[in-house]
Length: 274
Ligand SMILES: NC(=O)c1ccc[n+]([C@@H]2O[C@H](COP(=O)([O-])OP(=O)(O)OC[C@H]3O[C@@H](n4cnc5c(N)ncnc54)[C@H](O)[C@@H]3O)[C@@H](O)[C@H]2O)c1
Figure 1 (cartoon, protein in one colour):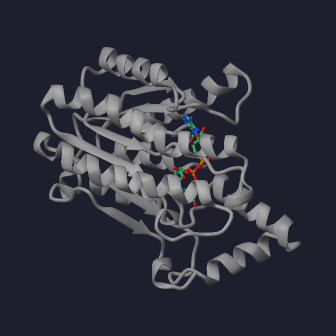
Figure 2 (spheres, rainbow, N blue to C red; figure 1 turned 90 degrees about the vertical axis):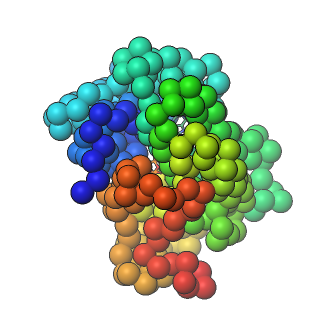
Figure 3 (cartoon, rainbow, N blue to C red; figure 1 turned 90 degrees about the horizontal axis):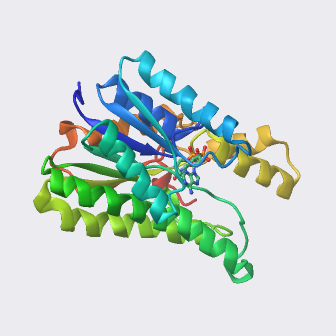
């Protein structure tokens, strides 16, 4: 089994109870890593609620016997990202694994009708945020000379387009390109950079998409889910844990000869004409 004992991992977008980030944080902790849980907690209006969500995740990590550092950060803010890295330096003095998981999908529209402000925000969160965190982390990781792994959570939509998702598809495609370029740039520093491209995962983000389809087509959400499942050869929606397992593989020595790859975790959907 993969062993991450003594490693420190930063996972962005890890605060939500039902999110992919939480599953990744818990999986890496269960393999021995200490965890930095970073999130904007954008669903939470009060700062107490934000810290409540982050602190709940920290307690879950600590219950696994690992150290946790909750960090409230907006990944689109260069200064906030720099402050987060400083906090990691102070608490742990090292960083081995970075999982760029934070992302968002909103403002869906035909690309030629889309509000430019929504476009910029989507690119900012899903692509520029990944760049800013990777940039700050990699500069430090290179100087530490310990090597490491960066794993970017893209989406199958980065290569398999869908109407109304222009900005999301463009951003996630950009994440794959950034992954490939940084893999080349960091290989000599023994830092591997890979991307994971989930398909349909049962989280708040995907539930919001089902609700939108339900409203748009006038069908109950249960019917929408039934139709979604029919498009998946393995016949089920993924759980966040399914994605976490692949991330753990890429973060550990099990994936030590892999860099610059984007791995589809879609239950076989990429084989279908969907
Ligand atoms: N759920 C799916 O089916 C699916 C499919 C493909 C890809 N993905 C990708 O997986 C990742 C996780 O998605 P999820 O389904 O768990 O979504 P989610 O909405 O449940 O969680 C996303 C997290 O990112 C955080 N976040 C958003 N903007 C941020 C910012 N500016 N700074 C810091 N944190 C921020 C949110 O607060 C939230 O905790 C995303 O990158 C998403 O695009 C999800």
